[in-house]
Image (cartoon, rainbow, N blue to C red):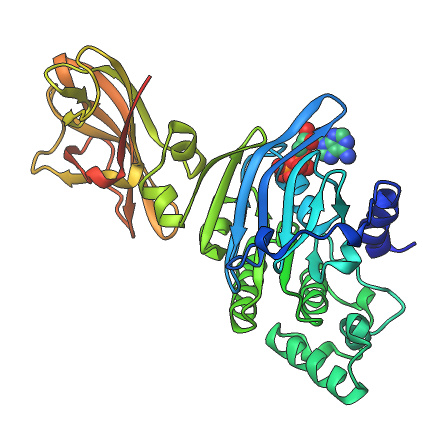
Amino acid sequence: MNAFQRKFLGRLSLNDGLLNVNPGSEPPASERSAESILSLDQVHCQFHKQKVVSDVSLDIKPGEVVCLLGPSGCGKTTLLRIAAGLQEPTQGRVVLGGDLVASPGRIHRPPERRNVGLAFQESALFPHLTILENVCFGIQSLPKPERRAKATHLLERLGMAGHAQAYPHTLSGGQQQRVALARALAPSPRVMLLDEPFSSLDARLRDQIRDDTLHVLKEMETATLLVTHDPEEAMFMADRIVLMREGKVVQTGSPADLYCRPVDPFVVNFFGQVNVYSARVHNGEVATPVGHLKAEGVSEGREVKVMIRPEAVRVTPLNKGGHDEKNSHVVMSRLLGPSSLVHICAHGWEDQEMHLHARVPGVFLPPEGQAVALSLDLSQVFIFEQ
Ligand code: ATP
């Protein structure tokens, strides 16, 4: 059994024993979801006594790219496997293309009868087939000229047409991954299910393959569920993100919804390093190292967590040689490429000193000791009751 068979077919046979295919119990049309191509409805999954997925509902519309995002072990892959039919949910329903395909005790349609495309972290191509034959593998039902034309088009779109006659072992990992994506897309599945397909690639290659993949998915209007633990990847790929923690959905929305309107501190933290302070509400405000902020909707005297994204901190050098006791000043500056990170010793209220990170676009490297004035972009500042 080769790597692809181990990863994909191996899982199929592993699950065969669990399959409870009963097409006779298809639900009436009234139970089918019209708008979504894939719906998971109040899905739960438990292994032995461990709850891995709890009450997750999500919908994917035709042509939409949805990312399942969350830390390692939060249940993303389990949900993807439930959508694929590789894992049975312990409760809930899966509706695909308007048909109920999973509902415990009622129906479990196997993966090969779901018309979904699958791609995993490792490309797992058939080693004895050429690249073109690998991509043609899933579209044997098409007449040969059409089959070759479709496979060639996909290989072109993913930058692999020049390798059509090569064998997988002669390609790099990134090239093999492009071919695996072309192979999964070739049958024009109604839904693509991608599990960390870019995570084994180095950063520059990953950016290029992600970009190519996004354009092909959009061009083919393929509904896609993509699993990733990388928030930047989710924001790059997704129309909508489903952020999970410990088997539950924490927040669903567009990348801008999650980044700019996070529902709790976990969401803020998940999208990158942030300056965090505890403070108490006094006269409807909280004191921070960058001045007083309004704490709307929080009761007087309550303790709050103030979260300030580094890019929210605006830094203006003051016309002074060094810093005096009362000024905030630069501790260190580092160029990170597209932006600069400035470490600041901020003088807040009652002469308290606080360490603060500011992220500034481009090259901005004020010297150590430079006195600075600080202000905030309030759209990237979040206050939560403790
Ligand atoms: P990662 O990003 O690390 O892949 P994930 O969010 O995709 O993590 P899952 O792979 O869905 O998480 O796993 C969720 C939990 O379920 C983990 O604790 C895992 O050990 C457990 N789990 C997954 N599959 C099984 C299984 N077949 N039997 C028992 N436990 C399992």
